[in-house]
Structures are given as structure tokens and as C-alpha cells.
Image (tube, rainbow, N blue to C red; front, top):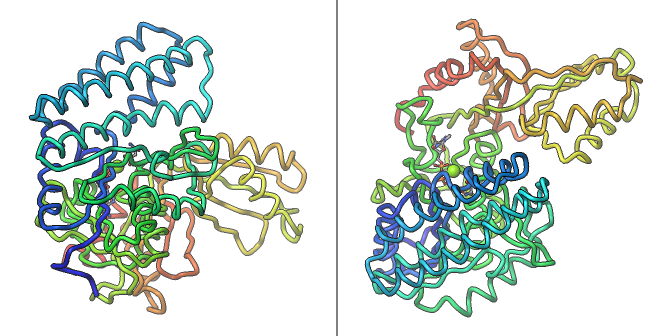
Length: 473
Ligand code: ADP
Ligand code: ASP
Ligand code: MG
């Protein structure tokens, strides 16, 4: 049972497009005012303004490679302009605008110093990448909080670290430590009251107080961590789409919103590239069984998607199709691999030690061949680790192919329903689409396979048609 029409404690996250500029931030503030005025207790998580995280990363890279302070100065001017304009459009109260501008200017100065440091050192470490990329959210949160204050509602902004998100030191992909949940609960509960707290998404800090990030699109994950800590009634993720859809609407404009989906299905979808959610978003919500809603900032009355524990049976066995681009297929082979005990363990240990995340795996029954898919960003490290580990004994060949995509067909109803794989591969075969590799998760909620990049969009369309996902769920 959901607590509809009651006063609720809700964590609401707004993505980069939702807070893309001052006008949008003021729309966000209006949405928040509505729910606040209804008596709900709201905690807000904000992403960086759209495009800012990419720009920060690009400039950190340029600083380390080109070392030109003049480029940093130019970037500083652009970044200041973008955020000052946002303040002008989002905050009507001159006193509030002035306070926010002062905070922004101070933070931009800090950022400039760090970038100039990188210019001189010519070195960019994972730790400094996290520090630099954290500024997107650190500049957004004061503006969002100021926009709320300018509507007459008390609001304060904090960083993830300040509010108690303490993580591992895996820069770029940090995980919250268990103590985070207690710490966030204690800190947030004493300041919540009737004010709307705004927290930077995406960032935390390690036990030494060094800034870490939770991975790209990590603000979803922040919202879920905060929701679980607070035992919120619901977690709402406000995006630029009408919820979780049957496939990426950029690929198939007729894609439909999925009204209700289970945690496990949403997890499968987000692991397999439906970048509508950060892959780890569901875990914290699931541990406290908190419903997650995915809603559209630009269509706020629309109900969107509700993600819950129950496996909701709809008439579709397959619920959604997702596509992961930017992956590399690696194939490791050698006749002596068959029966060589421990080869697989060595292979995956070598990959894990190199920090490589494996998206999917398939081993032929002859055991002389293992194929797996890694994200393109990890491919170089994966190949280096494998060459170092095997050095031509046992493994004879290591090949890679980056012109591939992974497609996943997801739905809880697939478990135990015979004939789904036949329909998937039959439909693709009829259209002459070649399948390079197949893997079915043991949850049976997901069949994933690899196709050539040039076949990927057609394959998604064919499957979307085959399972009639353009019909209402
Ligand atoms: P955020 O505002 O949190 O950054 P995004 O805008 O990144 O959210 O998330 C929505 C994006 O995810 C859309 O641009 C959409 O094209 C893409 N997407 C991929 N697969 C799906 C899907 N199955 N349902 C909805 N959106 C999807
Ligand atoms: N700003 C970060 C990114 O662009 C995190 C997020 O938007 O959730 O990846
Ligand atoms: Mg995003």
C-alpha cells in the first residue's frame, strides 16, 4: 500500500536537464513549493546544470595535457556566465541572489586554483578528477536552494559529504560505507524541520574527508541512499522523460511509459544500459522497500513509472529493451584452456585487479574460448591486464572488437515462460541480424546479446515490434 494523499517524506532528485538553466530551476522550485505547501517533508537532490560535468572533465583533461592557463581562464569566464545567468533567471529576491552569487564566485575561484595546479603539474589523478567534477553539483545546489528561498520557503544546501555520505576511496565509482545510513539519518533528521534541504547529488567523501564521486549519473544513487537513510515514504527521480519506458525514446519515439515495474526488473534494465537510472540506484531503496517514482519535470502531472518490490504482472512478458553502446567485446582463446583448472578465475581476478567492470560473459562449452564485454573506457586496461597475466601460456589469442553493442530484453514474466529466446532470436534471424554472443542471466529476467553496432538500432526496433511494446502495458 502506498501512502497516497497523506503527508509524506519524499526525497526528490532533479537531473541535469531539469536544472539545465535558471528558467528550469525556477520551474523546479515551483514543483517543490507545491509539494511542500501540501505539507510533505521534502529533501532535494540536485545534479549539475546540464553539460557542466562534461565540461569540467574536458577542462581537467586539457589542463593536464595542454597546460595552458589561458584556457582555464576562458573556461572560468564561461562557467561564471552560465551560473550567473541561472541565478538571474531563478532567483527573484535580490538579497538571496547576492548571497548565492558570492558563494558561486568563491567556489569558482577554488576550482580555478585546482585547474591551474593541474596545468602546472601536468598530471590528473582519479582523485583530482573527482574533486574537479564535483564542482558541477557544488555550483548547482546553492542556486536551487536560493530559488526555493526566493519563494518564501526556508532552505539550506549541503554537499553529500557534509550530510554524511561517506564512501570508499574508489574515485569515480565510490560506494557508500555502511555507516553512511546512520550518519545521514542523524544529520538530516536534526536539520529537516519545515525547511527544504538541498543536497548535491553525485558526490560524497571518503573517511579522510576527500571528495569522491559515485559514477556518472550518480545523483540517482544519492537520492536512493538518502531515501533509505531517512526511511522516506518514496524516492522521486525527476527527469526529462515520462518515466522508465519500453526502450530509449531517442531510439524509438513510440516507446511507452511502463507504469509499474519491480526492483529486479529496473535493476536489470539499468545494469544493461537503459541509462535512465544509475545502475546502483535501486539497491538502497530496495533494502528499505521504498517505492521509487520516475517522473518528468516537464510533464509533472503525469504519473510516470513506479518501481516497487512486487512483481507486477502486466500483459507483456517482455517489458523493455535496452541498448548499451560504447562497449568492447574481448575474446580469449587457446586449445589448452579446456580443462586448465583456474584459468577463468585467473582471468577475472586479473580484470578485477585492473578495476575493469565486466558487463557480460559467455564461455563456449568446449572451454577453449571465453568471450566477455567490458565498457569501452575499460578496454585498454582489460587488454593490458590479460596480456600481463597470461603471457601466451594457456591463452593463445586475445582479440577485441569495439564496433559492437549489447542489447538486453528484460521482463520478470520471462522467467519460466518458454519460447521467449526463440522469439527474440527468430525475429532477429528473419531480419538477417547476426548475433555475436548471447548470455542469459540466471534470474531469467533478462536475455542479453551482442550485435554489430550498425545493426543495433534495427535490432531494438524489431524486438520492440515483436513484443508489441508500443501497446499500452
Ligand atoms: P537525468 O535527468 O537524471 O540525467 P536522463 O535525462 O539522463 O536523466 O535520463 C533519461 C535519459 O535516458 C533520456 O534521455 C533517455 O533517452 C534515456 N533512456 C534510455 N533508456 C530509457 C528507457 N528505457 N526509458 C526512459 N529513458 C531512457
Ligand atoms: N552530474 C553528474 C553527471 O553528469 C551526475 C548526475 O547528473 O547524476 O554524470
Ligand atoms: Mg543523466
